[in-house]
Image (cartoon, rainbow, N blue to C red; front, side, top):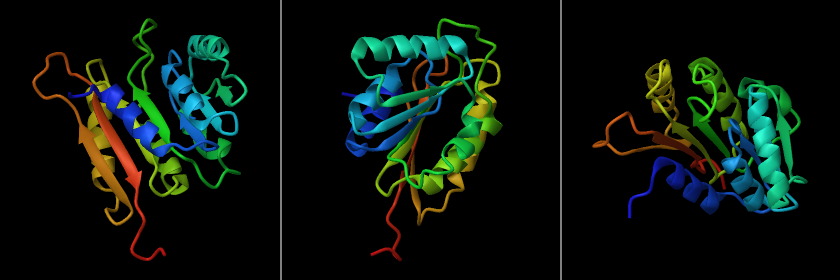
Length: 193
């Protein structure tokens, strides 16, 4: 059975995130990915979630409270472009997820931007644990969405194949610009023992 881009991103994270990891939800939105990550890292792990919309932070707080997962999550009402400062003292992360576009059920003019997204991804890559991944679910059917999608594809296509495996996954026979998944896995290089 073929999975949606979101479901496949979750499958990849379930296979790579470990109990006790530090992981990133770069766009918490309505909190579904944050709850998943908090479950995966368990009580000894940590999730740091980012969103520029106050409603996203509030929605996610409520979901975490209901699920009993508030202790292992820090929610920041700020953009994911601030990741380098937030993670300055953290040498390694066990994974990250981005859901790009706009938050469903809110103002559709508040969207993720190619420059801040690429800045955040580039800050996460050197901190990514070997065998772990960054997943980006890219929604492009809104103004600015195709531009962000193409900029991301151009950026990840240029990543060093000796260091990273990059996957593009998505349906090609659906209308209305279905989301695609971009997954980046950090590889063990030939120089590592």
